[in-house]
Every structure is written in structure tokens, then in C-alpha cells.
Amino acid sequence: MTELDANKKAEELLKGAYDLHVHSSPSVFPRELDGFQLIREADAAGMAGVMLKSHYESTALRAELINRYSGCKAKAYGGLCLNCPAGGLNVYAVKNALRAGAKIVWMPTRDAKNSLVFGNMEGDFFDRRGITILEQDGTLKECVYDIMDAIKEKDAFLATGHISPEESLILCREGRKRGVNMILTHPEFPRTRIGRDDQAELAKLGVVIEKNWFNLAQKSVMPEEMAETIRTVGSGHVYLATDRGQEGAPTPVSELKRFIAVMLTCGIAEAQIRDMVQKVPEEVVCR
Image (cartoon, rainbow, N blue to C red; front, side, top):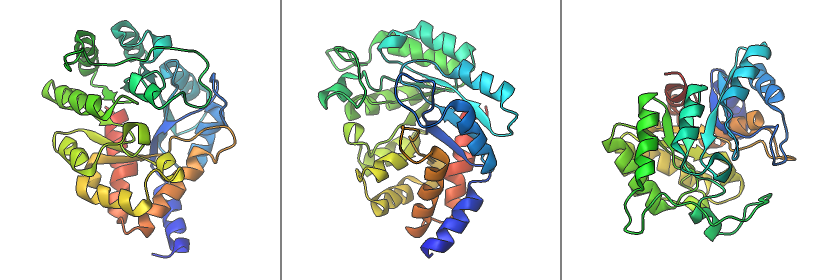
């Protein structure tokens, strides 16, 4: 498929699509769009919805406010990251966010011990020891099981965030044993990199695998490599997301279109794209 044809087809495939990893303001980090601007841009493209991700507060009630007053058909969805401002591995913060309508709970991101091994991320503004989900003997902390149980009760999803590959594999396997809906986030991100075979194993267990445009934009993975991993894992287990919204960067809607176009030029079929931008993400947020 030519680049021109791929761009035209990508515009069509945006209709009814979701992006389950976007950043917006208000935020303690600089963002390109506020939540209302974001949802209006998504709506204009014919998208079905976006997942608002904030590292340091729940976005569930923000999403409700946007949906109430935006006048858009596209919907905003919210979640919670278990970083230090949420109290870390805090089941009470989880229960509160779920009651407010959160669809995804992420394990620690910026404040994960594993992430801090690589150093602070741009914009980090306080010192912290870093959060791990494991005891010293390598088993999951008891509070992690409490968090999993709370998420299972609400039929929401638990995502891996920026915890280590080892932690992610343990968490996903244990979560699926308990019947928890699980998401492996950005396995091509250098801080959280997990190989193709492990991704395929987790997909067979029922884990949903996120593929992240930001990792392609940063050249952490090449398009052909990501496309081959999608073929190995299976598009029915994958969703495409942008991880965009940073100030000065292209907006999430424009980047999702680029992501779709790049995957089409790598030989990913239209039906597979529909799986990854419509069917799979819809199964995450519309339960």
C-alpha cells in the first residue's frame, strides 16, 4: 500500500476508533490540549473515545465532566495510576476511582522503582524511593492481591505501568489466574521492554497487549518489528494507543492516524487494524 493510500485508509479507520493512552490538561506536566479540546478533536475525526491518563491523579470524574458538557458523541474515559500521590499501592484509592467510573488502574508509572533505575522522566519534580509490587522473596505483596480483587469486582482492567519486565510477567500471570482483566502496557518502551515470545505467552493467557505510537516516534522500536510482533501475538489481543498529549507534540488524534497508516504500510490488514483500534479497546472500556 502506498503512503497516500495508507493515509486515506487511516482517516477512514479513525471512525469508531479509541485511543486508550492519552494525556491532557489540567495536569502538573505541560500538555498540548485540555480534555475538552481533546474530545472535540476526537469527535471531529469520528472517533468513539479516548482514555485520559494522568500520572498523579484519577481522571474518572474529569471524564464524567467532559462527557456531561462537551456535547460530543465521542466519550472520555478515566483511570488511576498508583504513583506516590495516590498513596502508591493503595487499595482505597483504587476503590474510590472505580466507584467514580475508572476503567483502567495502572501500576506505578513515573514512581515505579524500575522506572527510577533509568532516572527521572522529564518534568519529575520530587524525590522518591520508588515503588515495587514484589516482596524481597520475589512474590507479590499482599496489597497487590487486594487491588486485583477490587478491580475484578468491578470488571475493570489492571495495567502494568512502568514496573519491571519481571514484575509485569509475574503480575499478569497471577492476575489471569485470579480472573483479573490485565493489560501489558508499552512492552517496546525501553524501561519496560518485554520480548515477543513473552508477549505471545501473555496474550494466550488473555492479557491485552498495548502497542504504543510514542515508542515508534522515539525509535525505541522499528515499524516492521512492531508489525511482526502484532502478527505473532494476534491483533485480537492488541490495541493501538498513542501516549501523546505532550506540550509541543502532535496531538493524539493526528498521531493515531499516523500510527494506523504506518501499520498499513507494514502490511497489517485493514481487518486487523479494526481489531486494534475498535474491537479490542471497546472491550476494555465498554463493559
